[in-house]
View 1 (cartoon, rainbow, N blue to C red):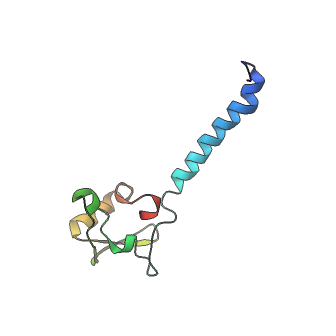
View 2 (cartoon, rainbow, N blue to C red):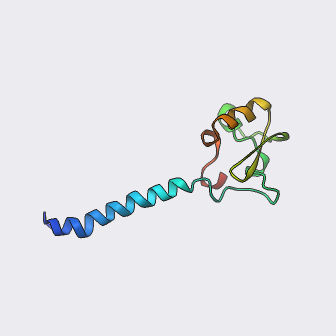
View 3 (cartoon, rainbow, N blue to C red):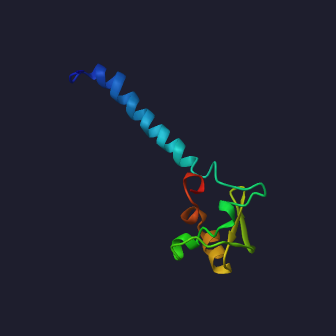
Length: 99
């Protein structure tokens, strides 16, 4: 359709690549925006986000094992889970708003 002309590359391919690169980096920076928080600022309805990784299931957190991060309060089922999260929150934070 466009052949091998440099003009086609400059006007069609290059802008498409730039849009792809910049839109993906913008999305990556906003992964944590729109996180599911209740009216008290508790993330993911108070469930322990570390338990999804360590136990493979949903476990309700306890507010006595809480940690504040990224404008939200995170509850955990144990002090160990809280410490794992505190050491590397992005490893345990859910994506797509928590669902």
